[in-house]
Picture 1 (cartoon, rainbow, N blue to C red):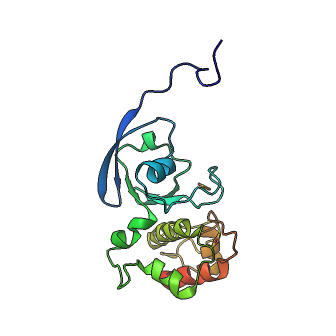
Picture 2: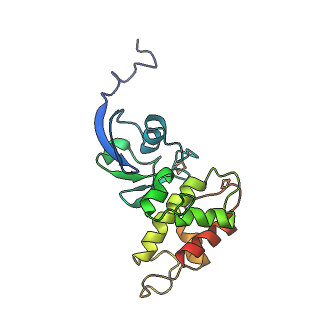
Picture 3: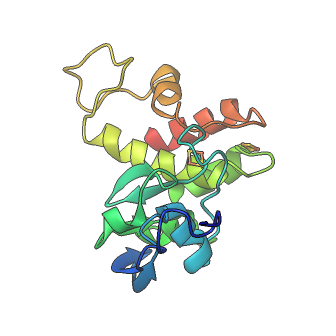
Length: 186
Ligand code: FES
Ligand code: FES
């Protein structure tokens, strides 16, 4: 009789993929079931992106995937062969405008505005804010955008809260997160 470990047949054969993460190319043999989040954290040692829920509900795992924000816990690594990924560890370099402390503008604003408490959600908030600001600059409307002809849409607090609503903060640092995003968006 099959044991629990062998039920369903042989384990899947590893598949070779290439990911460019924070500007460095990595060739990896991965389990086809591995999420991008697990590959980043467990294979590449990039532990900035956090596993909060592993269900696409909290945003703690947010990274930039080919320039767009994405929940890496929901992205199968094998489905993203050849992708370019930016994690919080590479945000400053990707911004190309790292300040004296080696931070991107949104990272600096988070520090200045004290936009974190425990910090667990912060890597996801920073990646999401970076992607969101780029989306807004390209003129993407949100659910609460009133003037669809305005390009780019004005980033008031309602816009920022809506656009960042996929990133939860259990510490409730939202007021300062919004202030930091507003400052950079302006
Ligand atoms: S860990 Fe990915 S959304 Fe929560
Ligand atoms: S700062 Fe603690 S969860 Fe956001």
